[in-house]
Length: 317
Image 1 (cartoon, rainbow, N blue to C red):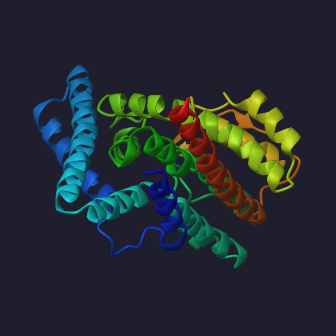
Image 2 (cartoon, helix red, strand yellow; image 1 turned 90 degrees about the vertical axis):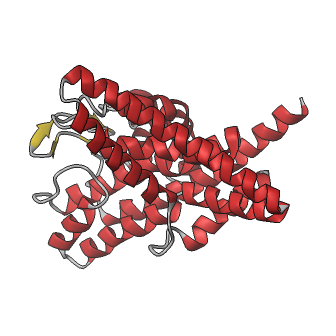
């Protein structure tokens, strides 16, 4: 099975997430939207929405997990090679390294062409903050933060869960991630309905985020960046984030690059205070975006190597 995980990762590096492919996340997203409408049609009180949000999170994750198990069993019943193929396809859809690179470089190219309005528009597709007033450095910083954070959420965490429980658990993790992306906002609309989803995402990312922080430090050494500052800022600023997890990869990346991330930003028209991460030795530029993408790829490969070694050690103890 280990070889399937590596094949799925390489497939993502080559193919990414083509728009024409019926990605499982689309179906999960539609289910979440449908369930949200049903829940809001039944309850409206804060406690009712919290209970409904717990039901939404539970049903989404369990349905995703057991549907995947069912599909794999059906495919195995037809032919073992079909089972392997379906496994690879599902695993491939859980990793988002190339998609993260492609979407980030779109913003990078717009900035390098001095098309700030386009860069703001493209950035709005991948971040939750308001982008309409951001300057070039602020846009670059937002992309660096997104790539660093999603090195954990979009790559290392899915790989971690596929090693832990195969395709069903990896896709169940993606369901948790999708729940948080859709209803996990701490605004008036989702404060109660999204409470369970946000907490579940925090729990699911607790271990992967910390592993990612360490791997990013290692990756900074391989890429001949500032490995000492990467480790120093990881230790010092890892908790300087509203999320209990996002600060780890962002701090490691900020130290490696010698830049400052975080700070207050507008979300849905409201100013949200965030402490800073890292030391501002230089302003954030498009070159930092490209370097963070490289950090993402190296740390992702390191995670595969690390989890493979742990898997074989545990298996033969």
